[in-house]
Length: 206
Image (cartoon, rainbow, N blue to C red; front, side):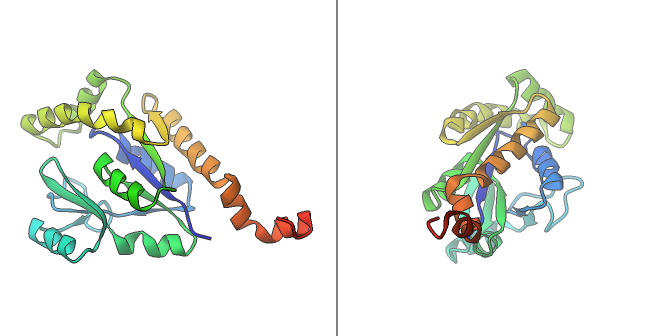
């Protein structure tokens, strides 16, 4: 039984990374795929934990070698998910979560239509701006660029299976956990994971 691939996307500042950390702490059945990026680490970020930080030249070399499951140029920097970070875990029956942008999500869904897509929205544009500024990590130029891009990014929320509004953090965490649970209870997943039980209960007609 293959694991389920979950995709979580959001505009910058919507709280995606904080939500992902919280749900992973409460749901040990999911593994986070650590993405590669060509941007410099932000304060507190650790190579191999938050991202695999590589140069743009190294990233382009990986693209040429077809090492990526998905990749995109986002806000001037490359981001991507390496194949070896996803496919082996799914093959072993483990659920994997991708924390990526909508461009990467489109690439993944084209290859794996059964992936479960979740889009995180902020409660308002003023709140999105407040969150971006409160991080204290980006220049004014970067913040303005991210706000302008966010409007276009949020238009793609309709391409996802689920939409979670991150207004109250704890409620949004609960919503994400509910999506994970519901996805695991789908008929096809349950039939595959509990074949022996169904054979016993249904007399071999599962």
